[in-house]
Image (tube, rainbow, N blue to C red; front, side):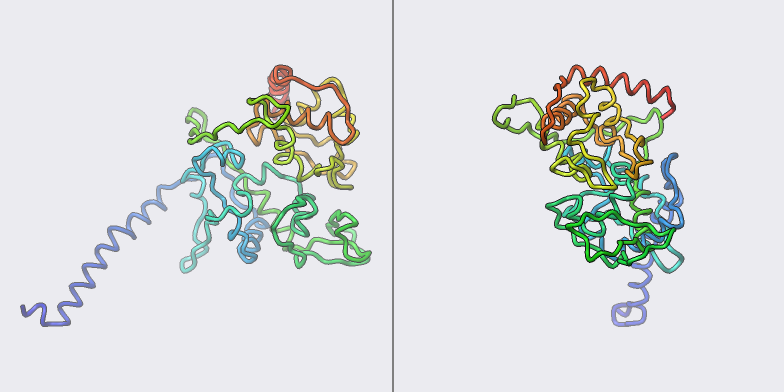
Length: 338
């Protein structure tokens, strides 16, 4: 009983017990995990600008609405080609001895997941317009605008990054110029790309597949909804009316590519992306079909929506046609070393 009556011995023993438990249960395993964890072979360290952009991302509270983790459920398939694994976060190190850094995995999906946003949306123009006012590219967006990341001036310097803002969203007659903080943030967003697993490693399958929805009027039960797929995959750039954004994204309304009865080029653009109009001031189009794992039926539905909307009246394609062309353009891309 003397031990329990001696507060010095009692508290010393309790301290040593909890310190030992903490050391072996928490500290040593954590240090060991940090030592053995390795990033995937294809992982690219953040550039200096991207590191600064991450700080801007944190300062503006973006993690409150956006996650950076693809869960192992079918509904997250749109955010990446596979579920996230521990190695995806192995490159996130402490800022220094005393300061940790945010992993930014997040828990709230008020906005879309950003795990693969650098591949899904590589366009600088899109990101800048979206940050200035999200309603420019997504009319129903509830994301707040970040105008303090931009300056509105009458005469932009030669090396300034001028943002293409539609007249309906312009403030006065000045030009909207991105600040260095805006460019850092875009650099960080562009760096967010899901790394492919090493060759030979099986791709984790998504669980809990969605149940098929009832078909809309005039559509077969198993036929994808082209309008919905267009809204999910294409509308943020080319807009609901198919007219695009002047100086940033080309229109699909009246497009020669869309109206062409030979669908090969259109399938090639969807699967491999397109940079052929950058000299006109338009941004590079990402390979939407590849990035979002769209199948032939879904791509055919998108193409037919574009071919028959906004006054367009072009010959429709079938999933079988698209499937053959997907194989063809994939072989062409491999031959070109893409």
